[in-house]
Length: 171
Image 1 (cartoon, rainbow, N blue to C red):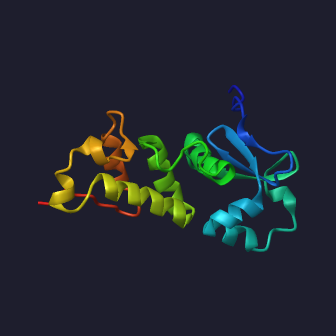
Image 2 (cartoon, rainbow, N blue to C red):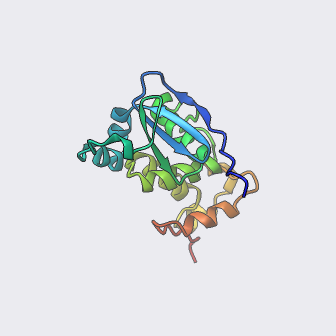
């Protein structure tokens, strides 16, 4: 049997020489700062506050940092890290937001307990899909804050996410 081929690991644009933890999503690694993750995410804060094993041979390391493998898409993690490190320079929150960005902040905001990001995503959905007939009758393009780019079906997937957001037009 042929040996397993090792997957090529890529460094993301969020690779800081002074970073002290590496997050890996798919084949992309992000060398970032535990303190910044803890500041923004309740889940990471709780995880990093737990006692760490003294035997570091059981934890994967790279470049002297522990590697935490995540089951998220690398592009989703990059969206969220761009908010942490670039303070919305990449995505101005008053501008139209691509549906992929919105999906990422909703999913990862919920998963990693980043309340302000999740709330921003939910606020945009509520704005785009109001719950009153009066607001619903306003032409979509006049009030929409999200660029669905013909991929409105992605919105349906969000309705099945763990937080069960349901947006139904008024009947």
